[in-house]
Length: 129
Image 1 (cartoon, rainbow, N blue to C red):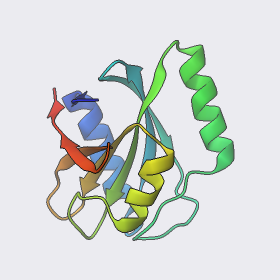
Image 2: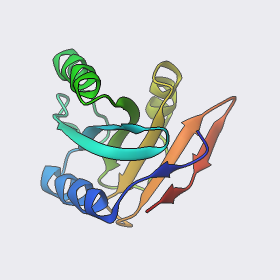
Image 3: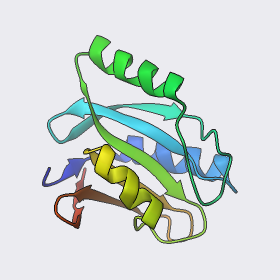
Image 4: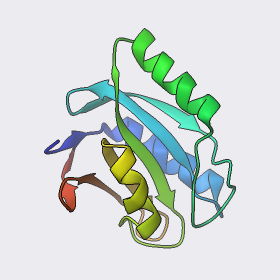
């Protein structure tokens, strides 16, 4: 994946969701086709932690079923870093290995989005409108 496309409307939904989940990390599954996000599935961070997130297996399964029903794919995992930059933590890097999709992070400090994809190493990919 060379880039990911996210509309301004979806950025607004994700940023507001992230701000409302503070002080904890928020998380979501991004549905789409190719590199374009077409739908969001806002999920619960069952860890209720400001430094980690976990999407329940139940919601993960539900998300993949929803994607299939909508004839889309899971093209990304979203989460927020309420108190730090939008850069993958060591924990994020570990989970990126088993979830080979775009990882989008929202910084609660800088109010910006950044996206990454794990190849041989972490690669930042551009976010387009």
